[in-house]
Image 1 (cartoon, rainbow, N blue to C red):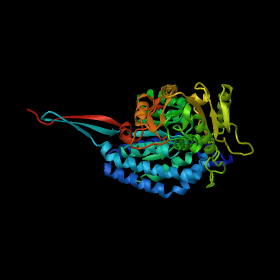
Image 2 (cartoon, rainbow, N blue to C red):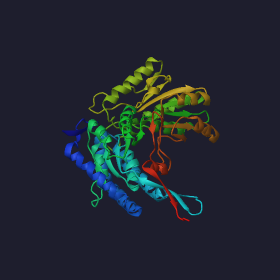
Image 3 (cartoon, rainbow, N blue to C red):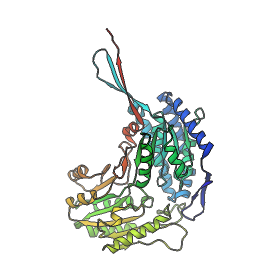
Image 4 (tube, rainbow, N blue to C red):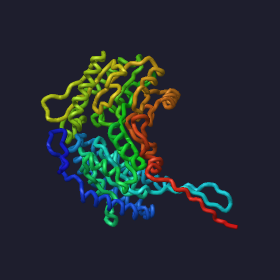
Length: 459
């Protein structure tokens, strides 16, 4: 049986490769276990050099990788090129802090004792990656896992399987077969692999429902799981916001990558004093998007990767309108094309209980609600089962600090959105997940603590 990935622009077959199963999968797991045992004994300097060389190989293949990303999931090719660049930059940052992050913590001790904490490799890390940012999502785990001394099995999304092969080619070590391997797995095979005692950690990016399944399987063996799940990320445009800056960036945060991002802006609360101005400017910005062949340099909005999501977006729009919202732009699928196109859509007066304000959209949808001020904004922004990121658009640092304290989110932005700085931990609150990637805390999540307690003097 083969895995087939469909091009969302013309519905052609973008990739086809056999599933790993039976003896083939068993061999990969065995190689990964053997590689992990040898790699953990490899000096950090050698691991750093190996990953640095892998980043160079990845960057050298930029054009072919970007093109394959576009063909598999529809991202405009110029955005796909930027994803390659960001992937390499993120890997280089994690490489730059690895020595400090992985260094033992030497503790104060009484005379005659030595106390320290080692950050030991876990072993084999199973990375189950998503399709929407098919390079940025796996690199958050692959690079720090390798630097920390782990082997990696990378199960990429069935929509973007070729991306897994690119990571394998870039970071594999011919002296250590199995150090990083791409695995094409069915849902059932992935579940069995999570239960395999040779797997020591699971990193999953995907839906809340998928996260529950992964966590349930991992809990059977008491191995840890990092879960990056959904988001319904709010933006608040306060009364003192720089309106032009806010509109341009909020709309970009909602529509970049066709809105297919867990940290995309999916709810917009605007102070009543700026409400009309926001709507007029947002509509003008949304009308500038160019839909078309994602391989075309002029295209700024590609098709949705998942055909069924077109219907979901239409349902959210219809639900919002039934509840009293006004549809100002878009709202219905693009007709006369084989592509999974949904146009940039602007809704106003969307009640907070509407699906468009509560359930993930994963599309170029901008639902807006006017609010009376900061108190109402905080309450509505926290009225969600998700808690990944939130943004506050204000000139006031004091206001931004208040929201940073009170918002239930893993990352809070002032005058920015939809961005990952690798020096900060990427983590979710509530149903947006558990654990973290990036920053020095990302290394801690991919290692385990070992206490060293030596008595160096005896009587």
